[in-house]
Length: 293
Image (cartoon, rainbow, N blue to C red; front, side):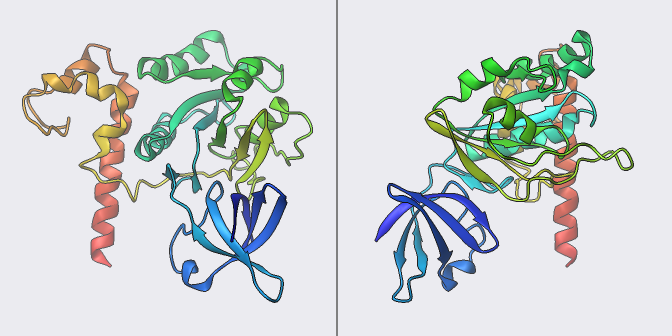
């Protein structure tokens, strides 16, 4: 039995990095029935059949797992957005941060295309997330600025870049390590969306660790988040929950709520609280739709 790390999963094949190189594997039939049975980043065991084909037989215990994008054993997820073109979405950024919090993976926000906005416009976005306790990197792959700080942070880590299409994830990776042959694409002027240039997550060696680009998307559904647990994934809420009259508190309709008071006082960004309410509504709607089936 041999073990290694899945660095790419494409068209039913798993590319497993071992001490002796990369081995192309398939997965045993019974494991195919399980959703997310093996994903990029997983440590696995595999064996070679008499016909010479290598088959994954076991996924080793994960230290963490993220559903969107589907990856395992990450040290960090870089939530990548553009300041504009496409416009920054507070709701989508907050959903992605909630997914990272739920998975127990460290997350940072990386704002690209800073050359296209003023300093005030950049700070308007960045200050929201700094107030929430997140580290924010402001970069421009066009001007080649801000990348040294991001590179130093990522050294030695297993990290994934995740975000909407067209924000420049692949371009950022190419700027961080020239020679990584990733196809980059621009935002379509006709529909205002980025072309899906990355079709699967792949771990790429980087300064003692790995970097991964992940497929872009236009939306992200909170279908697997429990509404009763959502408040836990907005990290800044916990600093004010001691002032809530009721425990647990949903931070919505309760008359005495420390979180709502903090929003009014500017201690929690209004956009973050609005995202929290929007995700709650989405979860409720998805649950109702599911119940009708």
